[in-house]
Length: 361
Image (spheres, rainbow, N blue to C red):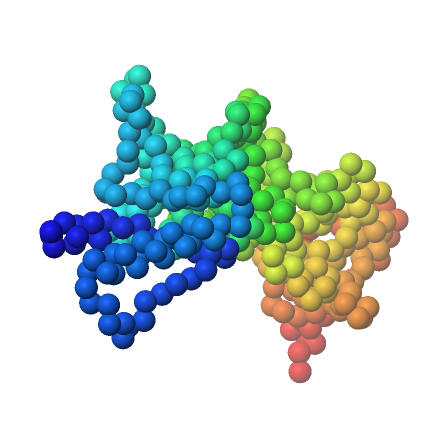
């Protein structure tokens, strides 16, 4: 009889308190040493909790896993136990990590089953507050689906990409079989990432069912630049000549990529010279740093150069409106120029420092 009582107590469910139930606990100094008496009290506790249900839509019972395995229906398909609120929940292993149930397909393969809530929405398992996607033998994730749309797991109001052991994240697909991006805590779309050939974590774009990649649009309908996350540097789109280019607005205005810390970056031409973006009227304008100061573009040598409008070079401005000079590769400041009518500027020529050898003290 003692062995039977011991076995039953080991399989008693862990009853959850959802805020509507009255908590009853046994104090450490309780004199109830008789096991049958403790069983009676435990049953009374469970019964009182069930009777305190405030929601008439809830069940008057809660299922639990008496064995470390799922129960199967008549066809051999496993099913999940339900909480009082009718949400299904996962069985846990010895470490408390949820375990997915799998069903056999006609092909002989197995496919995970997602638990569902009371509204039949799929639930992705989580461990230590981190979502856990199931993966197949090819290291690709299974997404929960509703209709023909795949869904992301959520954590703290943010949709989370599944990530495999190689740190490659995956996009879910919508009803049109197009990949679509997850949303961050501000409900803004963000890119998934992968690992490049230099072992850097880099963002990559989703693709349509045709295989065509597309870029995320921001609140202002701007295409969002991809970034090398490790280097905090943008991955520019390229033209047919493989030259880095800028995204532009509908009016033709080009705009710079901006990092999370508010630094802007210049694209480079095929001569490795940083190039200025242009406004809708074709006028060049400077990029800015995190302090909102305009910054100079650089030649391949590292020398800075001025933007030019018509035949006049213009100095960059700091946030307070003060201008400052560009510098050569040797860090000497040099003056902007006004070119004669018909003259052109050649960026392959290094700028001359005012502080030449003859001018040095």
